[in-house]
Amino acid sequence: MYFNGSPKNYLNFLNVVGFFILVMTTIGAYGMFQEHIYFLISFSTFGIMVLILQVLGICYASEEDEVEKIAYNHVEDMWNTQLIVDGYMDEMQWNFHCCGKNGPHDYIEILREIPGSCQTGKGKSSHYETGCRKAVNETYRSYFKYLLLSEHLSLIANTIGWIVGTVILVVLLCRQYRRNAVEET
Image 1 (cartoon, rainbow, N blue to C red):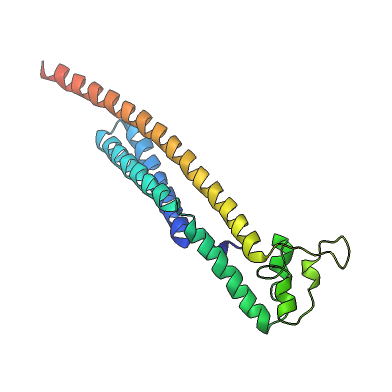
Image 2 (image 1 turned 30 degrees about the horizontal axis):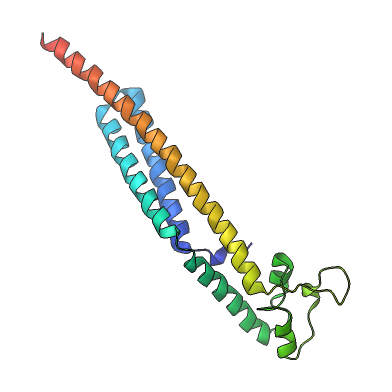
């Protein structure tokens, strides 16, 4: 699919959060198994940082205007190339079940036949009425909503993990405090 037009900042953000989660999990697991307090404090600190990053990412990602702009620019670039290289939009039209930039009338306006990639398969005169700008925009929005939903679910899972990790940290700190108190007496 056409993910090379995806919001690169958002995808990079997801990669950074994923890396932090990996580092955080490794540090937390090591600290838990070794009963190492400083590693567990680091785990807790990373957890808070990841939660803050995710909340900021969700706030940033809530702007769908950028997704619409990306879809618009992608189709616009494809259409401008189609004007020079006939058939350049065929793959997009097949994949998105669309025709032209705004509809099949775009081909009529530039004095070209409506290409076969616009045909619905129900006969030669039957073609998609939806323009690629609208079809690509709807597809990008649906993918973006899926990414946003997965980010929300990840935030919930990380919150639960952070709470569990913090409880383990508190239990281990209490154990160590008791050990130190016993050793002093």
